[in-house]
Image (cartoon, rainbow, N blue to C red; front, top):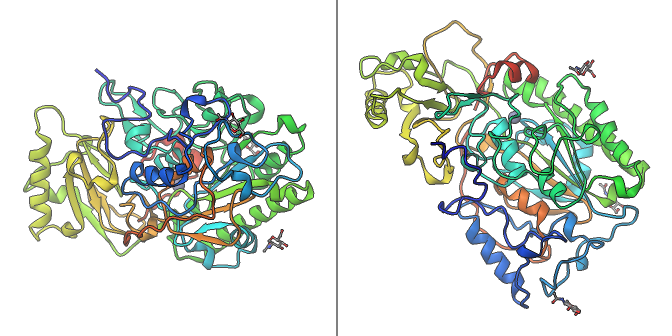
Length: 501
Ligand SMILES: *[C@@H]1O[C@H](CO)[C@@H](O)[C@H](O)[C@H]1NC(C)=O
Ligand SMILES: *[C@@H]1O[C@H](CO)[C@@H](O)[C@H](O)[C@H]1NC(C)=O
Ligand SMILES: *[C@@H]1O[C@H](CO)[C@@H](O)[C@H](O)[C@H]1NC(C)=O
Ligand SMILES: [Zn+2]
């Protein structure tokens, strides 16, 4: 009855999802995933990764990670001929490796050039950066992407296919405040960590309040989302974890900031307000660095700074109105599960989705619909496979792809016209965010090609490939973009269940 709800974190029937538990996963306690110990393992792993990650453009990051493979951690076997310790810098103060994963929501790639960002700059200068940004997954929305980052799975496989969706089997609605584990498939990093007897701490992250496996969102190490908590307080709390006795310091921590996404929605991607929001995030990174330095652990902590998606301006009446399609087919509001940038339609029983999609496309292509050519409607099975957006019943049968900056609305309304949005095709360049890694496992001053954020799970949990060896991959051309006119805080949105956040 409910194939969509089956917890299938690693679907094997599909060609596309990256394997969450590749042989690189090298937790001390996990002997079952020990890779073969041959002298050529390094090469094999590279090839293996290349294959398992399919079309994703992962980088020459080296996957030389992280906390389970540091100089002080024990390798579960003689898995590579070149031990990690040769390139991981030794820890000086901490007794075990620590990964701190930071998300700055909606930090579009390029924002770092809008204003001086000296602190982020320090991470970049002495760390490893995706030179042309981190590629989000489709749809380029907050919840799908944050959960892909921590599970290594595409949304169809981790279950959070939108910020807001309906389970067709039960009729139940997922919204951003839904913490029932049945929605959240896959295994997020904090669960992986505690399943291995280690400590994790989350200062906000979509999905972190959900009990899964051994993860019970413990009081001290798991903050319940409250968008009003000042950023400074978040940083200071994370810093205090480093004051704990060394055995108590979590090996994995998350830290989340709502900015600059909030401003981006409000004013678009090119407004001075964005510049200020970016500068503020930079000051938070500065506060963090300073606090870590004061404790003598800055060089010991693996800091990974990412964003979940980019942002694009939506102005100039770039609208497609569904009611305009009435001469071809009427699309009532209650068929539409989300409008834009992700148009998702589930016609009721009795209507054939392929017939509906065909008639919509006829209308859109007729030349008689305003901006019709900027929207293309697909049966989800017919979406470009690079979007990996098919294999879940939670995804409605009809999906529309919009050109950068366009929006779909039911009817013409007098609304605020300009703002910013995201959610578009992840090949659109403005949807890209940032990736910066700094710490003992990251080469200093290194640039790597863009890669998809589903690689981060592997990056954190895998050991094995020396950073000095890089793989040269041809980067796919990525060209596109998004926007919104939200005037709500994240808390508002969580409780109202806006699909577009
Ligand atoms: C790893 O290497 C050490 C020393 O060379 C050896 O004693 C040990 O048996 C090896 N372990 C495995 C799992 O092969
Ligand atoms: C990079 O690291 C080196 C060695 O720790 C340090 O001397 C230098 O100041 C750092 N550079 C920046 C920009 O922080
Ligand atoms: C959210 O955080 C603010 C600021 O710290 C605080 O005043 C408020 O009580 C918190 N709300 C809840 C529901 O905990
Ligand atoms: Zn976001």
